[in-house]
Image 1 (tube, rainbow, N blue to C red):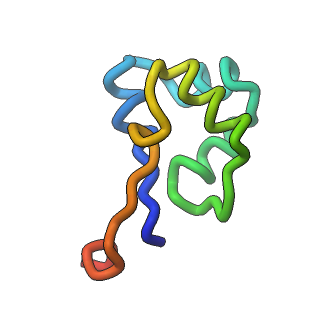
Image 2 (cartoon, rainbow, N blue to C red):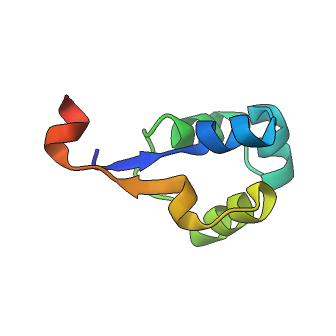
Length: 73
């Protein structure tokens, strides 16, 4: 998928666990794992906004476009 999700990077910088993030955002750890591992087909703007609020970041800090050739390499 050409959209990469960098939640792991921000969690490490904030020294926060997946469990703490899911609790503070209000989504299940399983749904957060789907998003974090790049298996999500969509993300609600409300969820994206909550992630940005909790992680104190911009949407572009969480999501980035990766060219198809680079993604497969």
